[in-house]
Amino acid sequence: MMAAAAGEMSWSIYWFMFPVSICVATLATLSGIGGAALFTPIFLIVFPLLGPEYPFPTVAAAIGVSLVTGTFGFLSGFTGYLRKGLIDFRSAWPFIWVGVPVAIVGGILLSALTGHGNELRGAYALLMFVLCAELLRRSAAPAQTGPIDDLSVRNGDARQITARNGTVYRYRAPRQGKGAVATGIGAFLTGLLGVGIGEVVMPQLVTRNHVPVAVAAPTSVFIAMVVLAAASFAQVSALVAGGGISAVPWNAVVYTVPGVLIGGQIGPWLQGRVDQRTMVRSIAALFLVIGVAMAWIAVRNVLFS
Image (cartoon, rainbow, N blue to C red):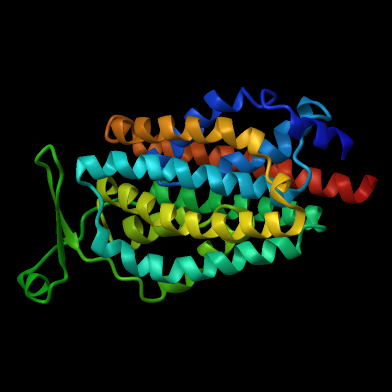
């Protein structure tokens, strides 16, 4: 704890997170995956390997910083996609109405689990395994636009997005239906563990509703930005209420936020230039490695504590 406190007093110790954050935000906004899925493992796995002065004092602090950072990263990506005209706002709101209140509940609950770090690590490892399987399934499924008939147009079920470059995307309006349960679970996990909403929204848009990836990823970024903002507000408020303003590692935030603001612009610029399936499979493999590492840490702490 003394080492952690000393680390909090140094405003230069986390300088390397600036370039790392650029890379993470680029991957997140390009794929629609929450950046916290990568930031949290960095904080919980990599930081302890760097020395006693680097680790955050609690798992909740690591997840809180991940949420705050991810919010700004998605905000930057949102502005980039907004300029491209690729966000389907009408289709996004039903996901947001479900996700925001549930994410706030998850964020508040995390503060009550501060003393259960190993359980949270185990839950995070399990989540990584599930996301790995889901991403691999998504990469194997054909991403096609659903057919639009005249009846769909008359009923208002058709969507048409015209990008700034003139490309027109037409597809049926996405419907949540039973997917609202998945959205709620993803939002709850976002508030609790910092990741989940982007990972459940993208499959619903692409696989179930056949929204073109060029529209689905920007729309997922917008949804994730709003849900993460609600979750991060709840989480940071809980941290400050429990340990004061110093409970949040601001000396890391000052490097991660500028980095994700830059990376959030690179992701939209690369949209269409990177093979989507190759990237998704690469992220799935990374999630598998993260899950194994997080599970090992949790088991090691239990067996050798």
